[in-house]
Structures are given as C-alpha cells and as structure tokens.
Amino acid sequence: MRKIFLLVLSTFILSISSFAQIQSGPMLGYSEMKEVLLWVQTQKEANVKFVYWDKENPVVKFSTDEAKTNKTDVFVAKLVADKVLPGKKYTYEVYVDKKKVNFSYPLEFQTQTLWQWRTDPPAFKFAVGSCTYVNEDPFDRPGKPYGSEYEIFTSIYQSKPDFMVWSGDNTYLREVDWNTKTGILHRYTHTRSLPEMQPLLANVHNYAIWDDHDFGPNDADRGFVSKQQTLDAFKLFWGNLNYAFDNEGVTGSFQWADCQFFLVDDRWWRTPNDRTTGSRDYFGQKQMQWLIDAMKFSNAPFKFVVVGGQVGNPAKIFENYANYEEERNQFFDLITKEKIPGVIFISGDRHWTALCKTERAGTYPLYDLTVSALTSGPSGPVKEEKDTPYVEGTTVTKHNYGLLEVSGKRNERVLKINVLDKDGKEIWTKEIKASELR
Image (cartoon, rainbow, N blue to C red; front, side, top):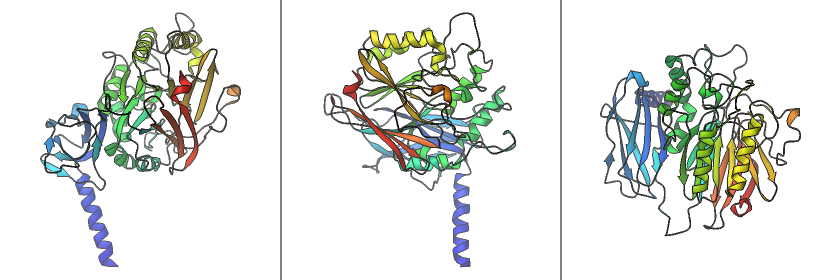
C-alpha cells in the first residue's frame, strides 16, 4: 500500500514539476488551411516555441519561430504554425527555454479541409457557451461563491468539437480589476489558468466575442473609460483570425467549411442604456453596415452572427437589442431587403438557455440561440418576456453548453442544435435545414 502511495505521489510531483513553467495553456486559436495560431502563457520571462508534426508522418517535424515572453504582456506568447497542409491533424509540443513541457493529456490541432471544387463540404461540430465565472475568494463579493461546476469544461472537451465559440462574459472583471491594466490582466490570467479548462484549450480551436463583463463593469457601454485596456487584453488572450476595425472593438469573421461566423461587438459603440438624446446605437452604423456588407457577400448556407446579448427577444428588458428599437428594426429590415439567407444569431448574457424564433412576413424566421451559463450563477426567464417566441421545450435554467453540428450535401446542409448539461448529457435537440432559411 505504501509503495502504491509513493508511486502516486511521485507521479503527482512529476506532473506538477512538468507544468511549473506554464501559467496557462497551451491554447489553440484560429485554424485555417495554411496556418494555425498557438498560444501559451508562462510564469516568468522565457523563450517559447512549438514543435509539431503530421500525425500520419511523425518523422518530419516542424517548428514555429521562438518568442520571448515578457512581463508587460503577462508572459503570453502567440505563435503561428505555418508549415501545415489542409485537412490534416497534427500533434504538437511546447518548449520553454529549450526544454519540452510534459502534459497529462494529448496536444493536437487540425487544419481546415480544402473541399472547394472537389467534394461536398465536410461535416463539423462546434461548442458554444457564455458566462464563465471563476471564483477568487479574496476579491469576490462576500457570500455564496458565484462560480461552480467547472467540470463542464471537461464535458465540452470530451464532446470532441472541432472548435468552440465563446459568446461573451468569458471572464468577469470586478471592481478590483477593471480600472487598471494590472487588474484586467490579473483577472484574465486567473480565469485562463483554471485547471479544468486546460485540456479543452489545448485541443479545441477557440474563437471569442465579448460582453459587458470582459469589456468592463456590469452593463458597460461606449463611455467606459478603460475600454482600450480591455480591448488590448482581449486581443492578447484570444486568438481570433482577424479584427475588422483597427483599435475599435472585437468585430471579426471566420469560416469553417462552408459556414461563416460573424463575431459582432455589442459594447464598443453602444449608447448608454439611459441616455435620452442623440441616436440609440447598439452595433452602431459603422459596424452594422459592415455586417450587412459581409453577410451579403457571403454565400454560406448558415451565417452565424455571434453577439454577447440577445438579438431576437422582443422584450425590452435588461440589455436586449429590443431596447434599441430603431436600430434593431433597421437591421432586420436590411436583412429582409437585401434578401440575405441563412442568418442565425448565437447569444449569451442571460444565464439561461433558450431558442427564440422570430417570424417575419414573407420570408424565413430569425432564430436566436441563447446559450448560458457555463459556470456563472444560473438564472431564468422573467415575467416581462412571457410573450417572447421561445421554442417550446428549449428553456434550460442550469449550467449547460451548446454542441452544434452541420452536415449534409452542399445544397442540403442541416444544422443540429444539441444542448447538454455540465455532465455532457443531452437536454434537448433541434434540427434546422438551410433550405428553411431562404
């Protein structure tokens, strides 16, 4: 018995020693056909690089450039694997100061498939979730801890999605955090370092949008004085493919197979909720017109518009888009007049999950899938939204996540929405055909 204990203890110590150089990560950022973004955070200044190889040809190994982490960027390194080919799966390693770091779970990434002009687009699946609170007792509000059931990240990892879309409130800045760069980067680091999150980050490609809590204080808007600092932190800690506007918000887009994802910012240009003069901006005209242009250009059968807050819910409660009625009507009207097919909204914020279906005269309905919360305190609908057109049976008021699957032939694509609990057990599922959104 004593020998078994000593063996387990020595294995644990070895594991701790192997991880000691790493603060958080590695994390996979965007995946494209010819390059993949790799991210890691060390505990102190160090030289970092990634070595990777095609799983089918492990003899030939490639390396990223080497980067030196620094205190200013809280020792974060972002490196690009650019010696990759389309449709491949790769194993990778992390080297810190020329020494390989050992992990107790695999490290793998993938490149997207070159299917165009060759085959039907590949099937794929992706995870969706919002509202991640990770407790930190010395700085949290007194009382019952707000975050719980972190094992949900293990369930998402075991679901084996190709990528994950983090749809806002991916960390919670608090009073002690949001006014300074020190506080903001501390909080981002603390959330990113959650042990249960690490295998998911290391093996599933990650894309993100923000909402009020990772942008600034609760219900924060364009008047938040430190938004440039939180923007810098967001870009440092996430690996999105692009940003549509220089130093303005986190708007961007990426494509997976034949589907396109539009990451839309609901904070940077947002008019304060209680302001009574001037225009009422939610997305703002600059961003909204870009979004209409980008969706009009896209020929994707499903155009997923990812927003921190609810878009489809007509109830003028909390921070829903309905509170910005003139802009919302303009946006929906433009989608109709421009005859843009395949639009589906993905949102977070509410700390409970539901699928909203907004009917429109003479054209297809607009769906808004709200998925929340991952670890933050669960909530539920309020009486003011009793007439909201939620699809029957889709309300979930406990920790959950979405697992969305796209499959079918090129002109017969089908979206299957699965909502699962913290243990990965299915709560509800629904299919939507692309042909229904034309």
